Length: 107
Figure 1 (cartoon, one colour):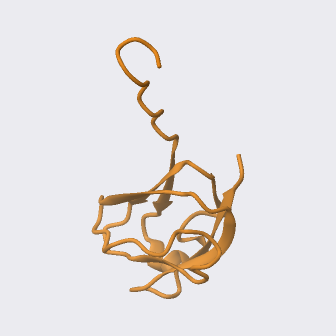
Figure 2 (cartoon, rainbow, N blue to C red; figure 1 turned 120 degrees about the vertical axis):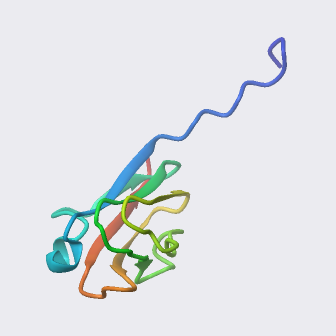
C-alpha cells in the first residue's frame, strides 16, 4: 500500500445521452440518429434537453443493466454506472413514439 493509504478509485468516464429538444415529434430520432453507445464501466448520464418531462425505459431489461430513469423534467439529468455489456431498444414511458437503441460495449 502506498504511503498515506490506498489510492482513490478513478472517476468513471461520463458518456452523455440527450433527449433532444422537440423529442416527441422526432419519434425514432428522439435520442439522436445513431444508437447511444457507452462502454462497460462508464457513467451513462441521461440529459433532458427538451422542455417536456420524459422517462427513458429499456425494452429488454436483460440486455444491459439499464432499466429506467426517474421522471426527467426539462433540463434534468440522471446517471447510471453501466456494468453489463449488451443492447436494448429504449423508449419514453410517457411518449412511446420516442424510441432509440442503447449499446453497452466491452472496453
